Amino acid sequence: MSQVSSRLPLLDTAKGLACAAIVAHHLAFYGPMSDIAQPLAPDLMAWLYDYARMAVQIFLVLGGYLAAASLAPEGVARFDSAGQQVGKRFVRLVVPYVVALLVTVLVSALVRPWFDHPSVPGDPDVAQLITHALLLHSVADHESLSAGVWYVAIDFQLFTLSVLAFAAVRALPQGLPRQRAAWVGQGAVVAGVAASLWGFNRDAQWDVWAVYFFGAYGLGMMAFWASRAPRAAGWVVAMAVLGAVALVLDFRGRIALALATALLLVWAMRTPAVRQWQGVAPLVRLGQMSYSVFLIHFAVCLLVNAVVSSLWPTSPGVNALGMVAAFALSLMAGQWLYRRVEQHTPSLPTLLRWQASLVAAGVLVQLGSNWA
Image 1 (cartoon, helix red, strand yellow):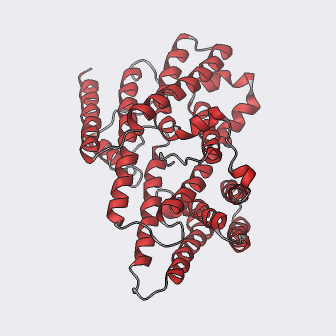
Image 2 (tube, helix red, strand yellow):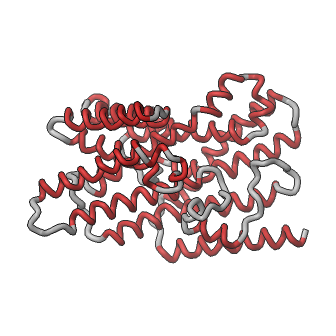
Image 3 (cartoon, one colour):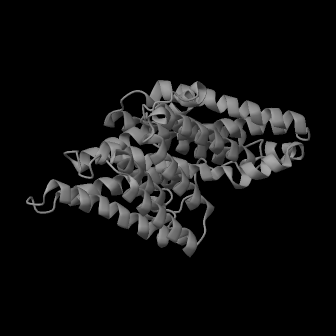
């Protein structure tokens, strides 16, 4: 979920819709407000619980689209240093992420004594805190400190994989013509999409690695090149074949959504009236700050769940209003994080300070729990 603004209202509108769906899914999934409010709208709750999470595929496709635009718009790396690209990405992703995790750790410690519910993360240990700060928590098989933090690690892996692939193509013999180098780079992406959709994505054991998700991400990259090509037919056919074969091998609704999103993106970006559409203003604003909302909404929802379920444990109406309030407060908290942290260009010292603060806060929480 790239925190960098797309600067295209159409893309920001799509990101805003996907962000709203993810927040609503987590409200329905984690409860207990959703459990009490469920009789008021059982079909809606079931849909949010089962299907709204697939909006992640929209972020994956858009992430790939924006990665291709920034890293290799012509299929050839336009950056100088792969290490610098990866380092900058890590810092920009992790600073707001660590701030949000710090808030979540503190909120969890606040509600844990009086809110006995499976959604409350346990006391974090030092190893868990460090792996989260380094985006290694999923690989290390540590319990997540917040909902959706796996995605941040996957986003970083996908970006890093893309940078390294384009850098490797550039490192080929210098006599390689630019157009041929572009074909090699784009061909590597197409091959990666095939390997992911037809193989890795069919085995959940790979779901902590970028290769599991590269199918959707790579479709987004292909969508960017298709939108810029003189004739898009070749790209569209390639995308359709890759997706169709994947669905014949093993039908997955999430892959169908990723394919549809990528194809719609090509159509939209090649249609001037659609590409220039200014979007829906509230959704555009939400899309621009979607990364911050995604990061901090779990802490907000956890706190509201704790308060409402403690004061009104059996009222469906009040719990439904609590869900609405949690959604609205999540947007407000996300706006605060976006303006105060994400919008500012971070530095390595800033990152290190926040990482140290997260680990220190977690240790203090653990010590306080042991003394209680």
